Length: 197
Ligand code: ADP
Ligand code: 5GP
Image (cartoon, rainbow, N blue to C red):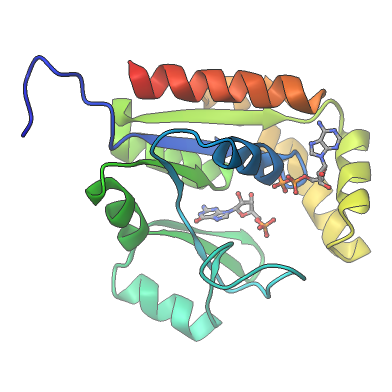
């Protein structure tokens, strides 16, 4: 039962955005693996193909373009974006509800426009974090090193990075992912402070 004297410590939304290759997945997975209390990843829907090792329902709900359009028509998304031409990604209402109904807090890995839309919708219940790369050259070499994308896909992702970085000032927190351990620690602290406030 809720009590007005008891601060609400669940049902919060943490949004993480950054250009592709900045280290969002690496940082989020490290924090989730370390057993951050009551923090659960919201599995987005997308019409892109799975990368090697990606599992349907774990990394994404992989939909056909037709299924994605049906989900839009049926108002199943909190937000969705065409992040790259022909490539759709969206936050499912059912994911957020599933986590919050169990008393959890939600972490979202979504693009900059989606992240700002979620802040608009949830207001103070949401904390937005933007990861910056040390440089664009380093971003490219991380994407190349990850080895999951074709050269033209890497060009497309690096090409969009400067546009995405231009939104950084509109986020609540900005963290440069230079040294990985430092970035993980800072992110964990921001999340813990927000959940416990
Ligand atoms: P995103 O989820 O933002 O697309 P990833 O988490 O997949 O990015 O990271 C992209 C690549 O960069 C991965 O191969 C990852 O191991 C590597 N990486 C992440 N953070 C760092 C860092 N601080 N220094 C060096 N490499 C990193
Ligand atoms: P990737 O293809 O590398 O997994 O993701 C590409 C981009 O789509 C990343 O910037 C990622 O944060 C974003 N993204 C993933 N899920 C969602 C979502 O549900 N909504 C929005 N708006 N962007 C998403």
